[in-house]
Amino acid sequence: MKIKFFNAKIMVHPNAPVIEGEVCVSDGRIVSVSDTPSPDFSAEKSVDCGGNLLMSGFCNAHSHAAMSLFRGVADDLPLDKWLFDRIFPMEDHLTQDDVYWGSMLQIAEFVKNGITCMADMYFYPETVYEAAKNANLCIALCGGANSYSTYDVVKFTEEMYSKYSTMSDRVRYFPGLHAEYTSEEKLIAAVADFAAESGAPTYIHLSETLKEVGECTVRHGGLTPPQYLHKLGFFDNGGLAAHCTYADKDDIALLKQCGVTPVINGGSNLKLASGVAPVCAMLSAGIKPALGTDGSASNNATSFFREMYLYSCLQKETMKDASVVSAEQALSAATEDGYAALGFEGGRLEAGRLADMVLIDLSQPYMRPLSNVRKNIVYSADSSSVLMTIAGGKIVYDRGNYFIGEPLDKIYSECEGRTKRLLREAGFH
Image 1: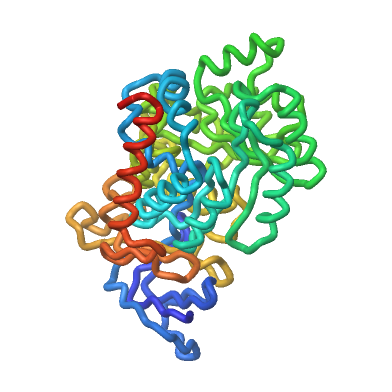
Image 2: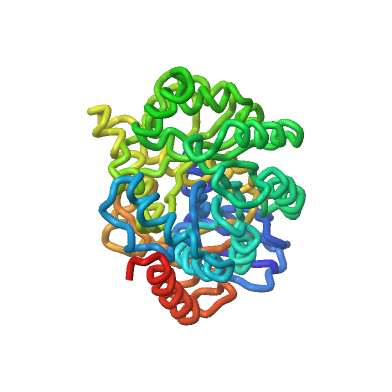
């Protein structure tokens, strides 16, 4: 559909001046961004933005969407107990339908929060894809198997990569594994071999806790998780690594050398007391991290406004320097850097790019005065600031109305019942 979004303030990218004008989209891509009317564009629909801000949608580069089913049932626990004592027992009873409805609940939250692109690592990736397709989101499906998986991981990886890697410009597949500490060396090497043969970048949880790093060095002759995975060729084609909370300077140099993008999950890491990632050191090394929310069992929200605030402000406190990690750098991590890391042509409002956009309400008291809109978005705004979310040129959220393929009441009803059943089957109720 051809849509014209007019009467808008427009942030082309985080370091560009905000202009006033219109954005024209067609067939899922941006046709033009202009400060003057486009008389040659025959719009089938015109949207008055009311003088509010049109900017790139957010890229959530690390999520476990269906874990929305576990929101509030595994809180106030350290990561190892959270994972092994609460999450794994419930996941043992997950069905394909559970994953679909849990993903739909998370996707409803995503579009409400202005998220138009997601990387998801979870069970039944085909089902997660179908849920994301309902809302027209860009999705990178990421392999998350481990040595406890009861199927042929390498064969499954080959099948998923073959199916999704060339399906469309809104879908990608990353061969990957859950983590070093859940995967035997033979399996890591086998996935690395497939990535080498296919030329694919990889995806994994990495150096999330100090315990993980310490135990890895004991198991592997002093090698940290990045060093060990590099030794096995896991990052030979680059990729993404979620968390990197305890990456030291040598690890950061290695990630840079290998073309690996760290995905920072500040909210989840804080709640699990896992630590604060060394973002300043990464930026100084020339790395451009992406942002993620992790799953709703550990965060528990998926607000990119909160993630941007934490991305910037945690570094200011850690470094005792209020000048580090600017609002513009946080916005870049939340938009263009995430899209680039996942290989999607979004993250900026430019002709030819994916029409993934969010309309931000500038009429709220916390957004005024408009002396610096970028600073206000990172330091003042919250998810209530999202008026509209556009994914691939399709309006998927508009002022409380959801256009995501399933009624919200149905999503809620399905998820409430399924969470109760999972708790009961895991022996918690």
